Image (cartoon, rainbow, N blue to C red; front, side, top):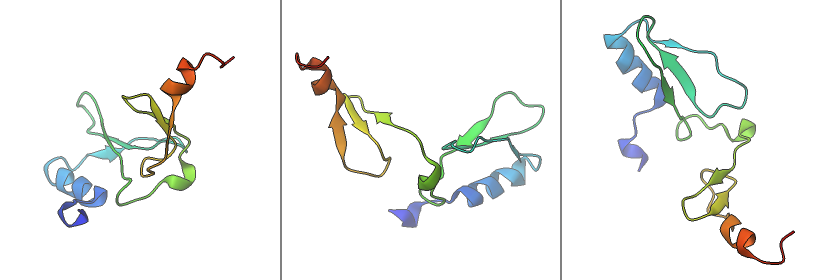
Length: 92
């Protein structure tokens, strides 16, 4: 439902109306979020921009779901059951 989506860039612009010094922090080449902070304030905020700025080409993540499955893609439907593999007796 992208008609209700506020893009990452629009969100940053909204925040900068209140805190103009809201600045991007350094990110690594495989980071899946874009980190920001307001100087002088504690903490930071990260944006996961997978809907408006894809990062598939640099993603190196595996995701473990609550039910024991591994997903290799945030948007993919394919999963591998790590739980079942670990429970098999013939696994060495």
